[in-house]
Amino acid sequence: MHSMKCSAKSAKRDNLRGCAILLFVLSVISGNAAAQETTLRSQSNVVLIPALVKNQQGGVVYGLQAKDFVVEDDGVEQAARLDEAPQGQPISLVVAIQRGRRAYAEFPRVQGLNSMLDPLFTLGTARVAVVELDSQVDLTRNFTRDASLVEADLKNLQAGDEGAAILDAIDYSVTLLKKEPNDRLRILLLISETRDHGSHVKLDDVVAAIGQSNALMYALAFSPALSNILDTGRGTNKNEMHQGVDIIDLMYQTVQAMRKNIPATIASMTGGEYELFATRKKFEVRMNDFTNHLHSRYLLSFAPKSPHSGLHQIRVRLKDAGSAEVLARSSYWTEGERQ
Image (cartoon, rainbow, N blue to C red; front, side):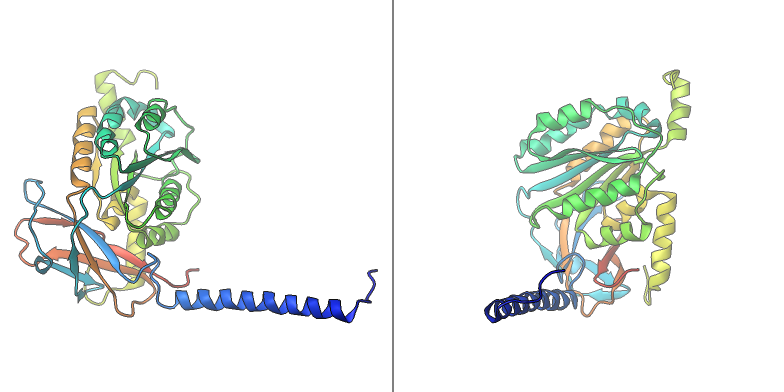
């Protein structure tokens, strides 16, 4: 049993130390509480909306102004502004590529990935990370400007196990991107099949993570069944948004859509692009589109007034749409308690 005796001087010093610690803890708690009152999960009171406008032939439409766009938040039109995209804006790109299940059969079709990333490295401002996924998610390469390191990683892809934890990989990749400086264009390039097999993260959490990030997702997806049919023929597989949005319904519909096709749903949420590929040529065409469209987006933004917590639905359109299509994020997430 410890002795209860101590000097008055020592007791006074301990009391002062305890008070100091208590004041520090209270200041941190009060500071955090104040910061969470009106802060968006995107860590800003401004919602950023990179928007790509394409004509009927798929070409990019240039020369538009802020007055040409209509931006709605849960069906309510917002006062949007259009910022100039900085020349040579630096890019942070995560390449998340599936190696599990039958993904190994797709490796020959994605051989052109390295050469298609070269233009980004040539700019000297791109940082690229590589994430691989089967039943686990592995950070193969953290952000680097060294093209040779990324090239070696992609050339050394190995077949994985029977899992495809796509949601886990997306959640992990978005977390990586959120740590990158705010002035960088944050991009996730996902190469995977359409359905998840073995993720542990909750769908609601992924929806929130995507909604709070300012990242775009480009998805190049393959269908194992379609690829198998085509490979059999080739003989190459012998070895092997409205007014009065119902927020609960919006969340439900988003989660259900994600269960059917994860890459397509998240690409739509972020304003990115989604394409299926079944041949090497198709993959290369889509990758060329991806690199060409990176710096062709209009940078729209708006400041929501007293937004409710949770998921918000965004709709971006042209006042005189004609046959043009606008690709822009369809949601964002504001601060609030989630169970």
